[in-house]
Image: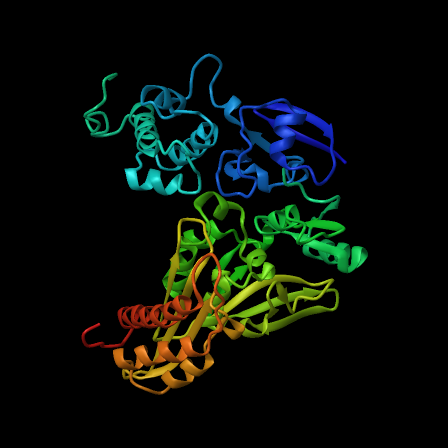
Length: 168
Length: 299
């Protein structure tokens, strides 16, 4: 079947088998290998991308279901040469070790901050609770997301909340 | 690498269109809602439909509202949408209790209420919640609409009364004064199926202490129809006391047939069925008291 998907602002049209999973479409058909393919059972969250406005585990969606829809992957986070604050936060706060879970973590973080610009640590942990960092680097992932929250939307009292902030 | 077997794909543009497609492709067609249970089953080749009929475009089936004294939940309501629904939480706190522990936040954005029910996993949470609430399922076919009690909906593991050519479209729950409800689940970790879980609903008489009616829903513990009819009978018309709740829990546990598996031994699951029933009843009573006219001592 023929599908047309807008990925990170670019229209792609491809002929696929209906059983093709969205993660494989993105990685193998489009060559966008930033999204990772992990557990294959919708448990680990390495394959999280956005389908329209929401994150989804793309190993559990058919590419056919994305026909006519918009997809956002980690390649679509930065604006040109300018990193998304979430990416900047992961760099500043050492939010990754091996990096396998990172694209999915960052896309969930972006979604969280769009809905809740000033999340508590508990809210950040809840948001990423369906995603696994096998390096167990959760503490720094939470700090990374908090860094992004502190730096992207100025709010009352926000800037003085992180005592470890060395980059104000 | 897990990949589904070859399958055809059709996209429905309305309920009528979905029913026409189901009629055309016959019993080997499966409805694809959120897909978060069906696609994993297809990857494991436990299900191998010839055709998938994608109903994700049926956004008119995604709603939670109150009409004519009933809470109505459209079958395409996503778990996250039910969790966010103020009216659902206000009338039936059990739904928010259960949704908070179903899968994980990302899966809840896509998985649907109707899809979960039709998948009919014997450990599914909402099946127990709707059994406790004595909900009604609305099923559409080409001839019209029929309704089924939640307790008559499942015919066995992964089997429901939804026949080929039919579509579950709505879940309805009567809103009755003096009601309170709660859900208790023990799981190994976020996103996992329960080791055991129990839901309870209590409707109090005007005196605020007598149980007019009670509903108990159980999942993952081998309870028939996801419910505990004998325990409910034991509560009906009696005072809402801690002793009675404990005995009701023991009765519920006694009628379960849990199996030992990687999530725990049968005797532990049976223990959970009883204890979680007791706790859910206790919370349901507190909420019934808070919501209405009841006066509960020591709750």
